[in-house]
Length: 222
Image (cartoon, rainbow, N blue to C red; front, side):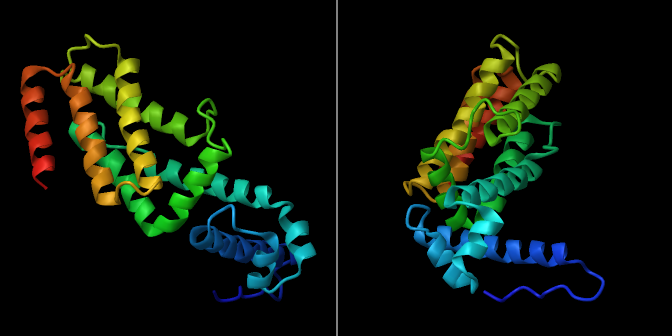
């Protein structure tokens, strides 16, 4: 990995420090992706970054501190990817929600898998955290269901919050299968969407129910 360009001239020493920190974070991200979180060490990081161990410690702290910073960055990136989903149609909304995540994971699949796995084991993804991935995803699912009901796609016989929880669970369970290596991202997409469409179908009005069945069949045939 290329060394950072050190800021000069009018740019302050703090700017150089930020460049150095980001350079080290990028290397840490690569090491976690290739070696896994448990095998990743500060000594290895310092060696790969071309700095001393005390420099890494002074900039970041412990190994867990580095990982928490990377996870925080990951949560922010996922939050941006999930923002402003298409609410005009429940099927389009489900596809946008899934494909935005899929596109993000494809950019650095090894890191996301390693980070999700380690974060789950260390309980960094608190389901109750308002700014966390789970909370953000669930809130989007609730908005999709509420709009689907208001626009006449759903009867409303099933409580919106309960329906949204099931939509969210489809994505979460597929993600766990992908993270643990049971499925690839292509299968991840199919699993998420079929699960979401079956969930919709439980409360769908006739015309929408017909569309959902057609979508499910198309996904099965792919």
